[in-house]
Image (cartoon, rainbow, N blue to C red; front, side, top):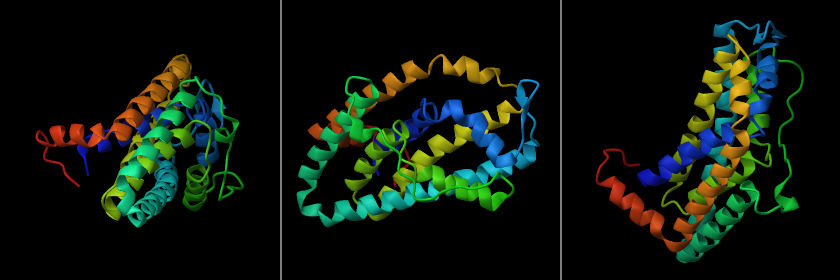
Length: 238
């Protein structure tokens, strides 16, 4: 797989975590996972317990994303004879998603949630954390859904099934690692939320413009050329 595409997937995951749909709700997710309460401006949770529950939570949404990537790749291979047309359509859709995220469009049909799993009860175990991850992964929130859909469109134009799955796995890493680190930081202080919250509107616009740029590169076929260029200077190829 092209290394530039992998970088885009990783960055999309990080920016998805920093979206207004996810980041401000982090204390609620952490409290649900551990059953802990917010006291003295921090979450009173055992760090080892939080790390374990978070890993299961991340595994839950990662599985959903990887399955989505496999499905998108299979669909793209089914229409392999029209790959150029698929790239054009994918590029155009990614641009639309970027315009929506940057606040330049307001299409209501893109602003919805769809959950295949419903998480119930408080976080009392690793299995419940895993189920919550499944629920998170299957929920198409207005912010995460746009970035995720863009990566799925890239997966649909990947050459192999494993490339599409790997692309969504990288996206999951980009979303999961910040979740793990910030969750741990919340056990020390909640002040980090206030500091980062100030930048969320700007980060959302940056994410939108990045999607617009990526969509234009996909539409014009330049993304493959850029990836081929960077491939000369790296040892990682999937």
